[in-house]
Length: 333
Image: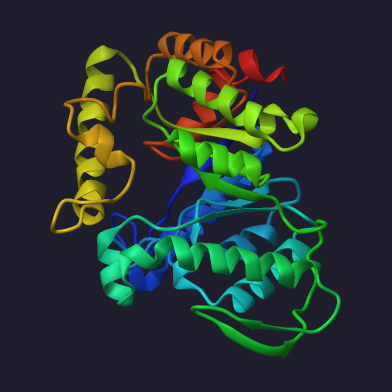
């Protein structure tokens, strides 16, 4: 099994305001240490307008990380395409891929938070169409060596050639988050890599991996590293410590639920399908003692999961404990 990081960063810290940017520097320091500890990747979110000082310039922060690491894969989870000019985004992604020597894993998505669509003044029912047009333009920009023009519903470009080309050919791997059967089938048919959610049970994950594998256009194109599963992590002293951490996590999840749900209650993130049941968003988190977490990892491995992206409550200290006490039994290191 391989392990990466999944999550966000904040410009502020507990003691320093966002104007210091110390939280972003702490994120970079943590990822540099994670590489030394043997972690494979760091996937970083994109969010706007929360008031939480979350990462909004994801590729810029990952470019900073590229300059301080040599092997760590640099992921986005995810860049929300409806917010972006597709040609500018293609140029920025290709630049990051070049300066990192081909370490970019470009996670892309349609967006789900109502407050973000509202803030950008973009109708949420346009998300899928904007996503599709953006994917078409970006992939054309990366592979075309000739000038081209584009006339679409949302974007128009005249006689352009997009520079620079990416390091990875034909372009960086594209990752999408998916949970439903139709979305997993679409991802497989288009050759996208897959990020599965942090709330699903091992049994559900096994079914989704099988569905993805069966749907690939190239039957022998499956590799376990094409599917990443997100999981929350907290290595506890005992059961009481784990329960307290789960309660903190539940409170943070409710904050996400609040900005995801539209005023009419329709649409939104897959988290909403779990949020209505008490404890459902924490039921399969990797919270517990090392032995308890090892048993949960065994269940994930038995379901076919070989690549896990961890969100650690407690930061670098938790990652050090995981690398020392848990990861060697699963990574072969």
